[in-house]
Length: 412
Ligand SMILES: [Zn+2]
Image (cartoon, rainbow, N blue to C red; front, side, top):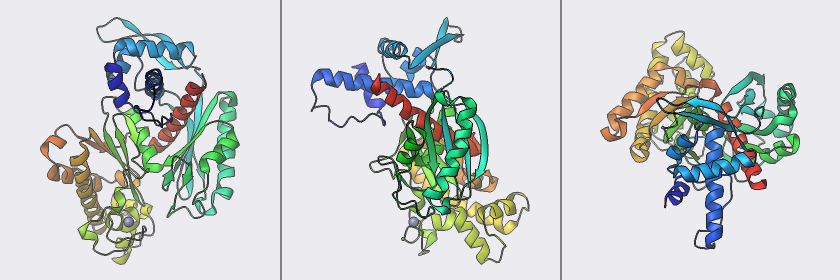
Protein backbone atom coordinates (compact mmCIF):
# COMPACT_ATOMS: atom_id res chain seq x y z
CA UNK A 1 0.00 0.00 0.00
CA UNK A 2 1.54 3.25 -1.07
CA UNK A 3 0.47 5.34 1.89
CA UNK A 4 1.91 2.67 4.17
CA UNK A 5 5.26 3.04 2.51
CA UNK A 6 5.03 6.80 2.80
CA UNK A 7 4.50 6.46 6.53
CA UNK A 8 7.46 4.13 6.91
CA UNK A 9 9.70 6.50 4.96
CA UNK A 10 8.67 9.64 6.79
CA UNK A 11 8.63 9.12 10.56
CA UNK A 12 7.42 12.09 12.59
CA UNK A 13 9.61 13.34 15.42
CA UNK A 14 7.23 15.92 16.84
CA UNK A 15 4.07 13.83 16.99
CA UNK A 16 4.17 11.29 19.77
CA UNK A 17 2.88 7.99 18.47
CA UNK A 18 3.78 5.64 21.27
CA UNK A 19 1.48 2.69 20.66
CA UNK A 20 2.76 0.06 18.27
CA UNK A 21 0.71 -0.51 15.16
CA UNK A 22 -0.59 -3.84 16.38
CA UNK A 23 -1.95 -2.17 19.54
CA UNK A 24 -4.37 0.11 17.79
CA UNK A 25 -7.52 -0.57 15.84
CA UNK A 26 -7.66 -0.03 12.09
CA UNK A 27 -9.32 3.43 12.13
CA UNK A 28 -6.72 4.69 14.61
CA UNK A 29 -3.97 3.25 12.50
CA UNK A 30 -5.25 5.22 9.51
CA UNK A 31 -5.51 8.36 11.63
CA UNK A 32 -1.94 8.07 12.91
CA UNK A 33 -0.72 7.53 9.37
CA UNK A 34 -2.58 10.58 8.10
CA UNK A 35 -1.18 12.70 10.94
CA UNK A 36 2.33 11.48 10.19
CA UNK A 37 1.94 12.23 6.50
CA UNK A 38 0.51 15.68 7.23
CA UNK A 39 3.47 16.45 9.51
CA UNK A 40 5.95 15.34 6.80
CA UNK A 41 4.16 17.47 4.21
CA UNK A 42 4.26 20.53 6.50
CA UNK A 43 7.94 20.00 7.21
CA UNK A 44 8.88 19.82 3.53
CA UNK A 45 6.86 22.94 2.70
CA UNK A 46 8.19 24.84 5.74
CA UNK A 47 11.79 24.09 4.77
CA UNK A 48 11.13 25.10 1.17
CA UNK A 49 12.20 21.67 -0.08
CA UNK A 50 8.84 21.05 -1.71
CA UNK A 51 6.56 23.67 -3.23
CA UNK A 52 4.10 21.52 -5.16
CA UNK A 53 1.98 18.40 -4.77
CA UNK A 54 4.12 16.65 -7.39
CA UNK A 55 7.34 17.32 -5.49
CA UNK A 56 5.73 16.16 -2.24
CA UNK A 57 4.56 12.91 -3.84
CA UNK A 58 8.05 12.25 -5.24
CA UNK A 59 9.90 13.01 -2.00
CA UNK A 60 7.52 11.06 0.24
CA UNK A 61 7.00 8.17 -2.15
CA UNK A 62 3.25 8.52 -1.78
CA UNK A 63 0.44 8.39 -4.34
CA UNK A 64 -0.37 11.83 -5.83
CA UNK A 65 -4.02 11.36 -4.84
CA UNK A 66 -3.04 10.78 -1.20
CA UNK A 67 -0.82 13.86 -1.21
CA UNK A 68 -3.58 15.96 -2.78
CA UNK A 69 -6.02 14.88 -0.11
CA UNK A 70 -3.55 15.73 2.68
CA UNK A 71 -2.66 19.12 1.17
CA UNK A 72 -6.34 19.99 0.70
CA UNK A 73 -6.98 19.27 4.38
CA UNK A 74 -4.04 21.46 5.40
CA UNK A 75 -5.26 24.28 3.12
CA UNK A 76 -8.76 24.03 4.66
CA UNK A 77 -7.22 24.30 8.13
CA UNK A 78 -5.24 27.36 7.12
CA UNK A 79 -1.89 25.66 7.74
CA UNK A 80 -0.90 25.70 4.08
CA UNK A 81 -1.70 28.35 1.48
CA UNK A 82 -1.58 28.21 -2.30
CA UNK A 83 0.06 31.12 -3.99
CA UNK A 84 0.01 31.89 -7.70
CA UNK A 85 1.46 29.42 -10.18
CA UNK A 86 4.88 28.46 -11.33
CA UNK A 87 5.31 26.72 -14.64
CA UNK A 88 7.27 23.53 -14.38
CA UNK A 89 9.79 22.78 -17.11
CA UNK A 90 7.72 21.93 -20.15
CA UNK A 91 4.68 21.06 -18.07
CA UNK A 92 1.53 22.98 -17.24
CA UNK A 93 1.64 25.71 -14.59
CA UNK A 94 1.13 24.50 -11.02
CA UNK A 95 0.20 26.10 -7.75
CA UNK A 96 3.02 26.98 -5.38
CA UNK A 97 2.50 25.82 -1.82
CA UNK A 98 3.69 27.72 1.23
CA UNK A 99 2.99 27.74 4.93
CA UNK A 100 -0.24 29.59 5.78
CA UNK A 101 0.17 33.12 7.13
CA UNK A 102 2.73 34.89 4.97
CA UNK A 103 4.39 36.89 7.75
CA UNK A 104 4.99 34.03 10.19
CA UNK A 105 8.51 33.60 11.52
CA UNK A 106 10.64 31.94 14.20
CA UNK A 107 13.40 33.47 16.30
CA UNK A 108 16.66 31.55 16.44
CA UNK A 109 19.99 31.72 18.22
CA UNK A 110 23.20 29.75 17.74
CA UNK A 111 25.09 29.87 21.02
CA UNK A 112 28.87 29.78 21.22
CA UNK A 113 31.23 30.19 24.15
CA UNK A 114 31.48 33.98 24.02
CA UNK A 115 29.02 35.03 21.31
CA UNK A 116 25.59 34.17 20.03
CA UNK A 117 24.42 34.53 16.46
CA UNK A 118 20.77 35.52 16.37
CA UNK A 119 18.25 36.03 13.60
CA UNK A 120 14.79 35.54 12.17
CA UNK A 121 14.03 32.31 10.28
CA UNK A 122 11.19 32.28 7.76
CA UNK A 123 9.14 29.38 6.42
CA UNK A 124 10.84 28.30 3.20
CA UNK A 125 14.33 28.46 4.73
CA UNK A 126 14.88 32.22 4.54
CA UNK A 127 17.01 34.05 7.10
CA UNK A 128 16.78 37.70 8.08
CA UNK A 129 18.08 40.30 10.59
CA UNK A 130 21.19 38.27 11.47
CA UNK A 131 23.62 39.69 14.00
CA UNK A 132 26.20 38.53 16.52
CA UNK A 133 25.84 39.57 20.15
CA UNK A 134 27.98 38.87 23.24
CA UNK A 135 26.88 35.76 25.10
CA UNK A 136 28.59 34.45 28.23
CA UNK A 137 27.88 30.73 28.32
CA UNK A 138 30.13 30.44 31.43
CA UNK A 139 27.75 32.65 33.41
CA UNK A 140 25.18 29.83 33.47
CA UNK A 141 21.64 29.86 32.07
CA UNK A 142 20.01 32.09 34.71
CA UNK A 143 22.41 34.95 33.93
CA UNK A 144 23.07 34.28 30.24
CA UNK A 145 19.56 33.66 28.89
CA UNK A 146 17.67 36.86 29.91
CA UNK A 147 19.85 39.29 27.87
CA UNK A 148 19.66 36.89 24.91
CA UNK A 149 15.85 36.82 25.19
CA UNK A 150 15.77 40.62 25.25
CA UNK A 151 17.81 40.84 22.04
CA UNK A 152 15.47 38.31 20.40
CA UNK A 153 12.41 40.27 21.57
CA UNK A 154 13.75 43.34 19.76
CA UNK A 155 13.82 41.33 16.51
CA UNK A 156 10.30 40.03 17.14
CA UNK A 157 8.92 43.51 17.88
CA UNK A 158 10.39 44.88 14.65
CA UNK A 159 8.59 42.20 12.58
CA UNK A 160 5.32 42.15 14.48
CA UNK A 161 5.26 40.03 17.64
CA UNK A 162 1.86 38.50 16.72
CA UNK A 163 3.42 36.53 13.84
CA UNK A 164 6.06 34.89 16.07
CA UNK A 165 5.52 31.11 15.92
CA UNK A 166 8.47 29.61 17.77
CA UNK A 167 11.93 30.04 19.26
CA UNK A 168 14.84 27.71 18.44
CA UNK A 169 18.23 27.43 20.11
CA UNK A 170 21.39 25.70 18.94
CA UNK A 171 23.48 24.74 21.98
CA UNK A 172 27.20 23.90 22.18
CA UNK A 173 26.62 20.76 24.25
CA UNK A 174 24.68 17.49 24.44
CA UNK A 175 20.91 18.03 24.54
CA UNK A 176 18.19 15.75 25.82
CA UNK A 177 15.61 16.69 23.19
CA UNK A 178 12.79 14.84 24.94
CA UNK A 179 13.19 16.95 28.09
CA UNK A 180 14.60 20.05 26.41
CA UNK A 181 17.58 20.08 28.75
CA UNK A 182 21.35 20.15 28.44
CA UNK A 183 22.99 16.90 29.60
CA UNK A 184 26.46 16.82 31.18
CA UNK A 185 27.98 19.51 28.94
CA UNK A 186 31.76 19.82 29.11
CA UNK A 187 31.78 23.41 27.85
CA UNK A 188 28.62 24.79 29.51
CA UNK A 189 29.23 25.08 33.27
CA UNK A 190 26.02 25.38 35.29
CA UNK A 191 23.74 24.25 32.45
CA UNK A 192 23.44 20.56 33.37
CA UNK A 193 19.75 19.60 33.37
CA UNK A 194 18.60 23.20 33.03
CA UNK A 195 15.19 23.14 31.25
CA UNK A 196 16.12 25.49 28.37
CA UNK A 197 13.09 24.45 26.35
CA UNK A 198 10.60 25.19 29.16
CA UNK A 199 12.35 28.46 30.04
CA UNK A 200 11.98 29.71 26.46
CA UNK A 201 8.35 28.58 26.22
CA UNK A 202 7.50 30.46 29.37
CA UNK A 203 9.48 33.56 28.37
CA UNK A 204 8.06 33.85 24.83
CA UNK A 205 4.70 32.08 25.09
CA UNK A 206 5.30 30.08 21.88
CA UNK A 207 6.66 26.56 21.17
CA UNK A 208 10.42 26.25 21.68
CA UNK A 209 13.00 23.82 20.31
CA UNK A 210 16.56 23.16 21.45
CA UNK A 211 19.17 20.84 20.01
CA UNK A 212 22.94 20.49 19.87
CA UNK A 213 24.89 22.60 17.39
CA UNK A 214 25.80 19.76 15.02
CA UNK A 215 22.17 18.65 14.66
CA UNK A 216 21.03 22.22 14.05
CA UNK A 217 23.80 22.72 11.48
CA UNK A 218 22.84 19.47 9.70
CA UNK A 219 19.17 20.43 9.54
CA UNK A 220 19.93 23.98 8.38
CA UNK A 221 22.26 22.83 5.64
CA UNK A 222 19.84 20.09 4.54
CA UNK A 223 17.12 22.74 4.20
CA UNK A 224 19.01 24.70 1.54
CA UNK A 225 20.53 21.75 -0.33
CA UNK A 226 18.75 20.02 -3.24
CA UNK A 227 15.87 17.99 -1.83
CA UNK A 228 17.09 14.86 -3.68
CA UNK A 229 20.01 14.66 -1.25
CA UNK A 230 18.01 12.74 1.33
CA UNK A 231 20.99 11.23 3.23
CA UNK A 232 23.80 13.37 4.58
CA UNK A 233 26.38 13.74 7.33
CA UNK A 234 27.25 17.28 8.43
CA UNK A 235 30.40 17.60 10.52
CA UNK A 236 31.00 20.66 12.67
CA UNK A 237 34.74 21.08 13.24
CA UNK A 238 35.43 23.76 15.80
CA UNK A 239 36.91 23.53 19.30
CA UNK A 240 35.19 20.16 19.42
CA UNK A 241 33.90 17.85 16.69
CA UNK A 242 30.25 16.95 16.23
CA UNK A 243 28.16 15.45 13.45
CA UNK A 244 24.50 15.62 12.54
CA UNK A 245 22.79 12.95 10.45
CA UNK A 246 19.97 13.41 7.95
CA UNK A 247 18.38 10.07 7.06
CA UNK A 248 15.56 9.96 4.52
CA UNK A 249 15.27 13.74 4.70
CA UNK A 250 14.82 13.85 8.49
CA UNK A 251 17.15 14.64 11.33
CA UNK A 252 18.20 11.31 12.86
CA UNK A 253 18.94 11.46 16.59
CA UNK A 254 19.28 7.77 17.38
CA UNK A 255 17.80 5.86 20.32
CA UNK A 256 18.99 8.27 23.03
CA UNK A 257 19.96 11.37 21.07
CA UNK A 258 23.67 10.50 20.84
CA UNK A 259 23.73 9.71 17.10
CA UNK A 260 26.58 11.39 15.22
CA UNK A 261 28.86 11.66 18.23
CA UNK A 262 32.01 10.81 16.25
CA UNK A 263 34.29 12.91 18.45
CA UNK A 264 34.66 10.07 20.98
CA UNK A 265 35.50 7.34 18.49
CA UNK A 266 38.78 5.83 19.57
CA UNK A 267 41.65 6.19 17.15
CA UNK A 268 45.05 4.46 17.38
CA UNK A 269 47.03 7.63 16.68
CA UNK A 270 45.61 9.26 19.82
CA UNK A 271 47.32 6.68 22.05
CA UNK A 272 46.32 7.25 25.66
CA UNK A 273 45.74 11.01 25.47
CA UNK A 274 43.02 11.83 28.01
CA UNK A 275 39.75 13.18 26.54
CA UNK A 276 37.15 15.58 27.99
CA UNK A 277 34.75 12.62 28.21
CA UNK A 278 36.95 10.83 30.75
CA UNK A 279 38.06 8.21 28.26
CA UNK A 280 41.41 8.05 26.45
CA UNK A 281 42.43 8.09 22.80
CA UNK A 282 39.34 9.77 21.31
CA UNK A 283 39.37 11.48 17.90
CA UNK A 284 38.77 14.76 19.74
CA UNK A 285 42.22 14.56 21.34
CA UNK A 286 44.01 14.67 17.96
CA UNK A 287 41.68 16.36 15.45
CA UNK A 288 39.61 19.03 17.20
CA UNK A 289 40.37 22.74 17.43
CA UNK A 290 41.17 22.32 21.12
CA UNK A 291 43.61 19.51 20.27
CA UNK A 292 45.31 21.54 17.52
CA UNK A 293 45.78 24.47 19.88
CA UNK A 294 47.33 22.15 22.45
CA UNK A 295 49.56 20.38 19.92
CA UNK A 296 50.87 23.65 18.44
CA UNK A 297 51.47 25.10 21.90
CA UNK A 298 53.46 22.01 22.87
CA UNK A 299 55.62 22.68 19.80
CA UNK A 300 56.31 26.22 21.01
CA UNK A 301 53.81 28.15 18.87
CA UNK A 302 51.75 31.01 20.31
CA UNK A 303 48.37 29.38 19.69
CA UNK A 304 45.86 30.10 22.43
CA UNK A 305 42.55 29.69 20.62
CA UNK A 306 41.11 27.96 17.57
CA UNK A 307 41.02 31.38 15.88
CA UNK A 308 44.81 31.54 16.36
CA UNK A 309 45.19 28.20 14.59
CA UNK A 310 43.02 29.40 11.69
CA UNK A 311 45.03 32.61 11.37
CA UNK A 312 48.36 30.73 11.46
CA UNK A 313 47.26 28.54 8.54
CA UNK A 314 45.21 30.93 6.40
CA UNK A 315 47.00 34.28 6.87
CA UNK A 316 50.52 33.31 7.95
CA UNK A 317 50.81 30.08 5.92
CA UNK A 318 52.74 28.69 8.89
CA UNK A 319 54.19 25.34 7.75
CA UNK A 320 54.02 23.70 11.19
CA UNK A 321 50.37 24.70 11.72
CA UNK A 322 49.44 23.69 8.17
CA UNK A 323 51.01 20.25 8.70
CA UNK A 324 49.13 19.81 11.98
CA UNK A 325 45.82 20.82 10.41
CA UNK A 326 46.34 18.47 7.47
CA UNK A 327 47.09 15.62 9.88
CA UNK A 328 43.92 16.44 11.85
CA UNK A 329 41.97 16.22 8.58
CA UNK A 330 43.42 12.76 7.91
CA UNK A 331 42.35 11.49 11.34
CA UNK A 332 38.89 12.95 10.92
CA UNK A 333 38.70 11.44 7.42
CA UNK A 334 39.61 8.00 8.81
CA UNK A 335 36.71 8.05 11.26
CA UNK A 336 34.34 9.56 8.70
CA UNK A 337 35.28 6.90 6.13
CA UNK A 338 33.95 4.15 8.38
CA UNK A 339 30.71 6.09 8.76
CA UNK A 340 30.39 6.79 5.03
CA UNK A 341 30.88 3.10 4.23
CA UNK A 342 28.29 2.18 6.83
CA UNK A 343 25.68 4.86 6.07
CA UNK A 344 26.21 5.51 2.32
CA UNK A 345 25.16 9.19 2.32
CA UNK A 346 24.59 11.45 -0.72
CA UNK A 347 26.71 14.14 0.86
CA UNK A 348 29.22 14.98 3.56
CA UNK A 349 29.09 18.67 4.51
CA UNK A 350 31.93 20.21 6.50
CA UNK A 351 31.12 23.16 8.75
CA UNK A 352 32.61 24.94 11.75
CA UNK A 353 35.56 27.33 11.83
CA UNK A 354 38.23 24.72 10.91
CA UNK A 355 36.32 23.80 7.74
CA UNK A 356 37.42 27.17 6.33
CA UNK A 357 40.95 25.72 6.06
CA UNK A 358 41.58 24.14 2.66
CA UNK A 359 44.36 21.76 3.86
CA UNK A 360 41.92 20.20 6.32
CA UNK A 361 39.09 19.85 3.81
CA UNK A 362 41.47 18.40 1.19
CA UNK A 363 42.80 15.85 3.71
CA UNK A 364 39.29 14.73 4.67
CA UNK A 365 38.32 14.44 1.02
CA UNK A 366 41.36 12.37 -0.02
CA UNK A 367 41.00 10.14 3.03
CA UNK A 368 37.35 9.43 2.13
CA UNK A 369 38.15 8.63 -1.50
CA UNK A 370 41.02 6.42 -0.42
CA UNK A 371 39.33 4.50 2.38
CA UNK A 372 35.72 4.14 1.21
CA UNK A 373 34.30 1.53 -1.12
CA UNK A 374 34.01 3.02 -4.66
CA UNK A 375 30.27 2.43 -4.60
CA UNK A 376 29.99 4.66 -1.51
CA UNK A 377 31.96 7.53 -3.09
CA UNK A 378 30.71 7.21 -6.68
CA UNK A 379 28.28 10.13 -6.37
CA UNK A 380 29.32 11.34 -2.94
CA UNK A 381 29.36 15.12 -2.54
CA UNK A 382 32.04 16.35 -0.12
CA UNK A 383 31.89 20.09 0.40
CA UNK A 384 31.82 22.93 2.90
CA UNK A 385 28.41 23.90 4.27
CA UNK A 386 26.95 26.45 1.86
CA UNK A 387 25.37 28.40 4.73
CA UNK A 388 28.76 28.73 6.52
CA UNK A 389 28.23 30.35 9.91
CA UNK A 390 24.43 30.55 9.47
CA UNK A 391 23.70 26.82 9.10
CA UNK A 392 23.04 26.32 12.82
CA UNK A 393 20.82 29.37 12.96
CA UNK A 394 18.64 28.23 10.06
CA UNK A 395 18.42 24.72 11.56
CA UNK A 396 17.39 25.98 15.00
CA UNK A 397 14.70 28.17 13.43
CA UNK A 398 13.46 25.29 11.30
CA UNK A 399 13.19 23.06 14.37
CA UNK A 400 11.09 25.75 16.08
CA UNK A 401 8.84 26.12 13.03
CA UNK A 402 8.43 22.33 12.81
CA UNK A 403 7.41 22.18 16.45
CA UNK A 404 4.96 25.08 16.05
CA UNK A 405 3.41 23.45 12.98
CA UNK A 406 3.11 20.08 14.72
CA UNK A 407 1.28 21.78 17.57
CA UNK A 408 -1.00 23.69 15.21
CA UNK A 409 -1.71 20.43 13.38
CA UNK A 410 -2.56 18.64 16.63
CA UNK A 411 -4.87 21.47 17.68
CA UNK A 412 -6.64 21.95 14.36
ZN1 LIG B 1 36.24 11.32 24.40
